[in-house]
Amino acid sequence: MGWGYASLLPLVIAFGIPAILIFIRSSVRQKRAGVADEIKKGFGFNGDATPSFEFVEAKYAPDPKDRAWPRLFVSSIPFCLVAMLGLEIIFALAGKDGSSLGNWIAASALLGTNGGKVEEVTALLGFVFAGGILFSLGYLMRAVTNFELGPLSFLRATTHMLMAAVTVVVLWRATPAGPDWIPSGTLWFLAAFLFGFFPDLGLRYAISRATWLPLKGERTELLDRARGTPLEVIDGIDAWTRFRLDEMMIMDVQNLATANPIMLYVETPFGLYECIDWIAQAQLCTIVGPTAFLALRRHNIRTIFDLERATVCEGATANLRAMIADILEQCAREDVIAAAAKKPAPQPASEVPEPSAAAKPSVALVDDDRKHLFEMMLDDLHVHRLRQVWELVAAKLGTPYRRLSPLA
Image (cartoon, rainbow, N blue to C red):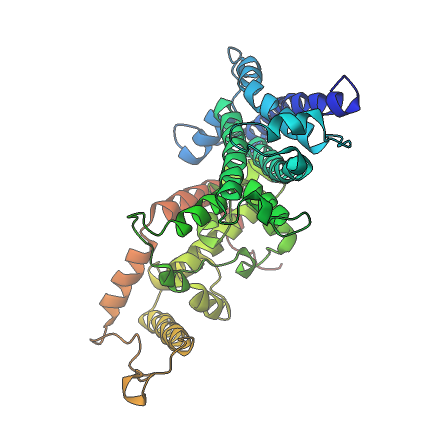
């Protein structure tokens, strides 16, 4: 193919991507280690006494003996070669008889295509590698953002592209009408790009076509009753904030509820107090459910610690616990009724549960029962960890500032 731009450009891009990512990884580590050192000095966090900070320190503490970049660069060589092959296919120049690369690929044992289909095969594989390279680039960038870029990251990206290419080729060859079934410009090219971006999609499609395989099925109808809660229900999180949290693999409220507040502060541009507030809201939403979370927020109970102070701390009253329990019970009934209304097949009136009986306890609860229930809801490792960080920050601020002093 010569050494024109069609050959040099894939070479530069394929080997330049890992080099840039490795350089960015080093820069990310230095910046976040500096932030961790500042927060340690500012709030007096000690790794032995604060496990949340110990995880951050272990992840970003500088190690003079660490020489990760040679291992990363060597492990990226297979990725570079596969990516360069894909980019060569994408940038291939098709002449009257097709490109030399396309002829070589089309004549391979897996494809076995005649000369009349060379351009089509090259385009098909080009779409596959385009999807695979874009997915790999996003995956590696996310690994850098989370400081998880390692030798296995490049191996996973390489395997992803190879699996996508082989899956599409096998599906293309296994169609009942054969390769001639696909004229140029059909949805096969869109499918090739999607299978390149999501290789599991191609494998699932192939497995679904092989109905004779004795595979365990999945009860997909349960997904309607196990939906995740979007991050936007948290006060202070909008679409742009969610996009940034998605990069940290925080996709829904449950992920945010179990996040390390100090780690979240170090790895994102958000403030420490803001991160603590978001996680406290997410923990309340996870424990009581989104419907009850929004209802409690209307009564100025917006975080897990607000619920704790209102139910089990000193000053909590039986009437307040009864009010909150009634809110939780009412929201549970509303959820049951809403779920029943979404059923596709209408039920006879005799089979529809009464709204007053839906999700209603079989026995009447007394105040001791409610208090024990709230204590059980608050007895969670993630809540304990967040409470520790909360108390350490509050202690650093000082007890005089826990209450607003009266005006002189």
